[in-house]
Every structure is written in C-alpha cells, then in structure tokens.
Length: 110
Image 1: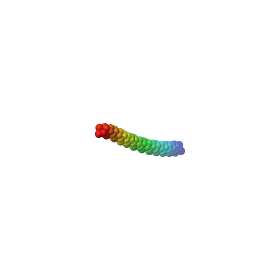
Image 2: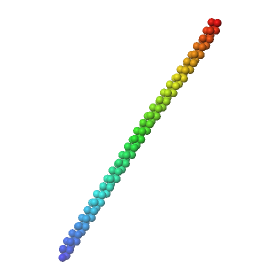
Image 3: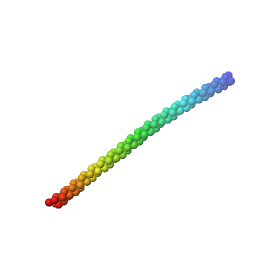
Image 4: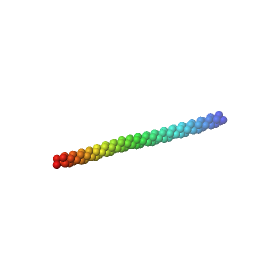
C-alpha cells in the first residue's frame, strides 16, 4: 500500500510538472509570436516613414529644381528686357544724332 501510494504521488507530481512545463512552453511561444508581430509592425512603420521621408525629399528636390529653373527663366527674361531697353535707347540716341546732323547740313546748305 505504502509503495503504491508513493508511486501514485510520484506519478501525480510528474504529471503536474509536465503540465506546468507545457504551459510554460506555450507561454514562451506566445511571447515570441507577440515579439515577432511587434517587430513586424515596427519594421512596417519604419519602412512607411522612410518612404514618406524619401517622397518628401524627392518633392523638395523637385520644388528646389523648379524654383531654380523659374529663377533662371526670370533672370533671362529680365536680361532680354534690359537688352531691348538698351537697344531702344541706342536707336533713340542714333535718331537724335541723325536729326542733329541733318539740321547742321540744312543750315550749311541754306
């Protein structure tokens, strides 16, 4: 009786221990899965943030480029206007000189 009782107690203890180990193993697996899921979410968020940053950088580079091109176009336009104004001034000066010469010639001929 005593040895049978002892064997039964030992068996129950072993079964309890195995059940506890199984529970611990399941908890460890769940914890690992939770950690992996969190890491996946973080990686996805980091990727999205990097893509957003790259898109913003590309946009700002494109905007900077277009701003530079607009500035260059504006400067070219201003230079062209300045040239036109200078040409008009030169024409006016030449016309004035011609008029003076003609007046002088007319005065001499008279």
